[in-house]
Image (cartoon, rainbow, N blue to C red; front, side):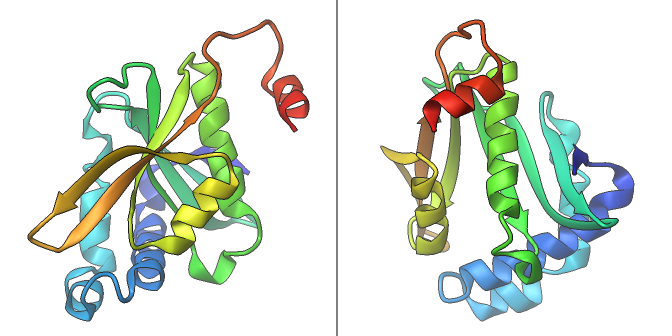
Length: 181
């Protein structure tokens, strides 16, 4: 079940965030950053600030009273993307990966974009995170040519986008999904 994130969820969300980043980013970021600087406590503090900006929303995927993943979305702030919803964060507990939770979170984001009349979803992912890039590409996302390099930590992010629909055409998301499949 997907539901809106609450303050009571922050510690679990922070835990998922830390352990998923450690799994995904090992070899991309230093172990010092992953295991000393990135803590559940620091991520919980950070998560408390995610929703200070207007339009930022968080949702959790919960099953059997266990939060297994989360997503944070907002209107895209990127220049030239006024009709895009940004997927700011999507993480699944590493022990829960491979169960389709990430796909459900991504589909939820796309449905949310469609219902709010956004024409596309965009996200930034690390160039060196092949697993994440494969995940997005398998679901119709493509690198749109935009990249951002951070010299201080020697990583490059790539922007991926997926067109949702320019205009609603009088049928529901589920009907559209069946047509697209």
